[in-house]
Length: 83
Image (cartoon, rainbow, N blue to C red):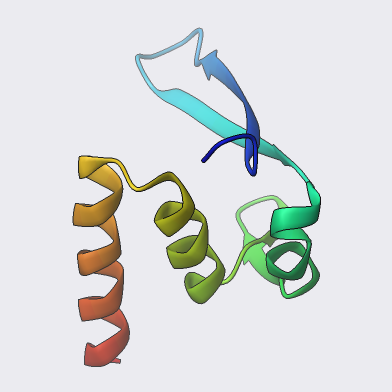
């Protein structure tokens, strides 16, 4: 994405099992500021989290444009159309 997206991934393994929790932390650059401003608060097991919207995620993946991103974009659009 030529510097438009800066991501740091943190992963934690559950010491009692084999579950892995991975979180991507996005640093807000000027190119993705609008996506960040349109984030949504969602309920999760332990409380609330701020996440980018489905449309925001599609825009982020479009900026990167890898093969997997294109597959993900197609799936996200199909799921959106089904709801």
